[in-house]
Structures are given as structure tokens and as C-alpha cells.
Image (tube, rainbow, N blue to C red; front, side, top):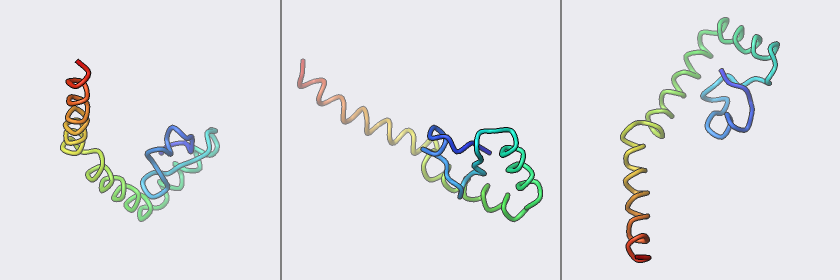
Length: 80
């Protein structure tokens, strides 16, 4: 569950989250839709888990940080 605000949709989409307008009625409708549709819940949660493993796992995060520091360090040394 998330609202369709830009801050959420930069990471989430309808394949990995139930996105609703930012008001109580829409949020309640989204929750009720998920409660009533086991197949939809399984599809969204499966997609979310896959994306999480592919883009946001600890291993992926560490690889991105290593690359960032490798890119920064030579530039820093050259400036000194």
C-alpha cells in the first residue's frame, strides 16, 4: 500500500504496490481490494519481492557503494 505521490512512485509502481490517491476513501478502497483478492495480493507481493532482491538487496547496495567510492576516490586524490 502506498499513495501515488511522486516520492512513492519513484520506487514503486502498480506491479509492486497497491497505489491509491492520498485520501482516506482511496486508501480504504485499496486495502479492501487487496483483502478481497488473494491472487492480486500474491502477484503484487511476488513482484515486490523480486524487485527487492534484484535492486535493493544488501549485496546490490554494497556493490553500488563500492562503485561510488571507487569513482570518487581517484578524483579526490587528483585534486590534492
